[in-house]
Length: 255
Image (cartoon, rainbow, N blue to C red; front, side, top):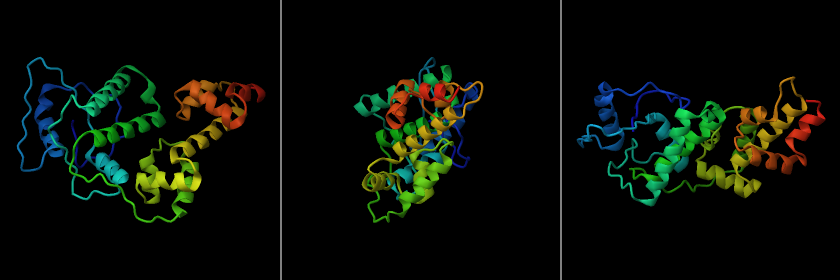
């Protein structure tokens, strides 16, 4: 895994990158050693001549921000992973399946060309790595008292930024709490989750677009533009919220 300590966070992770060439190997070794090893530990990569290699670039700043957002803080300085990875562990097998699918879609498909969708899967990938690989940060959560006021701030932020590729980490960072605290607060005070609330807001935006169609408005295009990729589930959620199918809304509005 390649990490750049001082680079600005890239959006998005699943962008198409130039083909990796052999002269990059030393830089990769150096960067991998910085994130997977302590500074005083030597690191060496050894592989067969014809071995297939896959390098995923994740900015250190993005990774550490995600870790701090989820766990509440970085207690032990810079994030470092244990270089010993047991590939047969069930968690690692699940991670491999996730990577296989995401990387296949990134190279062959068009799903990650949608920013709202790509951002969610970036967060899933980083949290899966943090949850599956051993690292030097504590995994207990921030359990301090948080006033309910952050819930309203989160709701306002979601309503005004639903068109952006928001993640739970983005919302938590904006209102100044950990992801765990954000979810616990929404569950306690709203009986829902921040991401379900975001989905409801986006469904309302879809409805607005369908009620005010342009000449080329199509349900599929509007749904994808608001981050809904599973069209069957989208239709079911839309019908549950508005008591009609999205196609019925569009037809009724003259689209």
